[in-house]
Each structure stands twice: as C-alpha cells, then as structure tokens.
Image 1 (cartoon, helix red, strand yellow):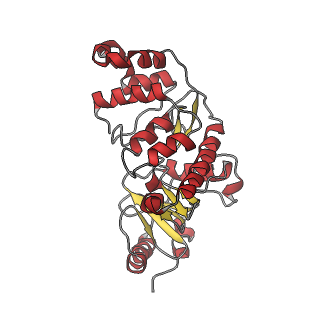
Image 2 (image 1 turned 45 degrees about the vertical axis):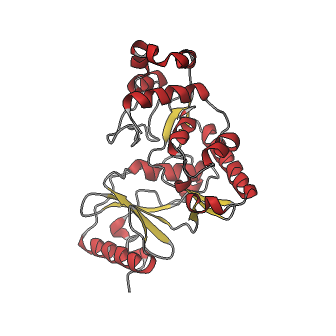
Image 3 (image 1 turned 135 degrees about the vertical axis):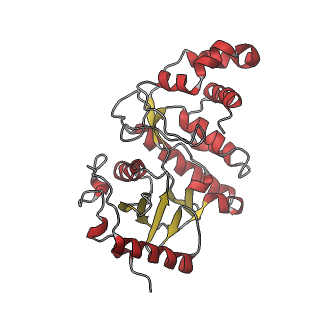
Length: 301
C-alpha cells in the first residue's frame, strides 16, 4: 500500500507557509527557499505517484495521489502560483485548492501538494447543463471576477506577478517577462507603439478604436488570465474550484476580458458569448480590437 500524504507533509518536506491558518492571512506568507527532497522523501513521492496512477488514473502536470491530496509538478511551476492560491484563498470567497506543501523533487522541479477538489471540468459538462445552470455559473463567475478586481495592488499601475516578480503568459511567450512599472510600459512591450507607428494603414477600419485605447489610462487589477471552462471545476450548477493560477497577477483592467476571449475561441460552443454577456463586469471592445490586431501581427496565440 502506498504511504499516506502525511509522508510528504513530514518535517523533511516542510511547507513554505507559516504554521498559522493561511486562510486568515491578509497577504502572501513569508517565504524561504523550497526544501529539496531527500532520498527517503523522493521514495515516498514516487510511491504515491505510482499509487495515484494505479488508484485514480490520469496523467499530466496535476495528479491525484490520495483520497484528499493532489500534486502539481512541471518544469515551469513557480513559487508565485502557490502564493497566489494562498492570497486568493485568504482575501476572497473564490474557491481554490489549498496548498499544503511546497518542495523541490530530485529534478529540481517545484511540487505543489494541494487539497484534492471533487468536481468536473466545466468544459466536460457544458453541453449537458441546462440554460438555468449555465446562467447560475456565469453569475458566480461575475461575483468572483468582481472580488478579484476589488483587491488592492501593492504598486498601483504596475504590471507584475503577485509577489512583484516577472509575469508569465504562455500565449505571449515561454519566457517570463516584466515586471513593468506602468501599463504603458507593458503595452509598449506587447507592441502597441510599434503598431500605431507602422501599421495604421493596414488596420484603417480599426483606427478609431486603436486611437481611443492609446489615449486612455488604466488601473491594474488582479487577473486570473486564463478563465476557461477547463480551469473551472463544478458540481452541478455550483463552482467548487477555479484552478491553474500560474499566470495570475496584476494586469490592466481590460486584460481578463481580452484574455478570456482568446482562451475560449470557439469551444465550447456558446461559452464565450454567455460569459461576455453575463460574467464580465465590464466589456472592453476597443481593447479587444487592439489585442486582435496585435495578435495578427505577432501570432501570440
């Protein structure tokens, strides 16, 4: 029989989080370097992964390892994701998996041991839901997005990860980028200035929208960056978890809207249209036009 999750939660795999209940925290916990697993803990990890594969199936970066735990590990996993889960759990009512332990394995990959959440990906059940259930889910999302937008950034106007470090968005590139001291600096990085200086003639019908965006200033709000049905777990009409916060951070107020558009192009059918109508607190049509123009130039998606 495989060892219980307490083996990975022993002193040899000490949490980066303080011993207090982080759900009552007011911000990110004090961190120290993630501990490296020793030989014995590595054995336990491999045993639990094997047991989880046998007992629950599944492959990929997130795998269930017991009745109450799951583990996420990739070469790209950063401490920031664990911090974000803790911060969101402490400062909103958004359901997120609770991180129990954080450590490096023998490959140097960061591992997040989290509470297992029982639920189905919204993507898998979307077409089976009744219209009233879909609407209920959208209204829950609207509340959760609103809570994110009410969080106060430590550096208003700066575009950065929760802890002030580099941002991460696989649609933009595989490497981290930023942080940026202002939204304008972030937009320059994305290519907006270059577009305005060199490509207006090719986007003549969109010039008014592009110019309106160029004249606006934006506040920064906390943003998930990938609100797609694959990252929303549900039971019936109730959201039980929003997952995959690795790209979350402080971004321009329109970013959640524009990124959700690209995350949900065409699938599942009808999701984006209902999301735009019922879940987003504010639409940003000009900013979406600008992003679509940039995408067509830089093929980011």
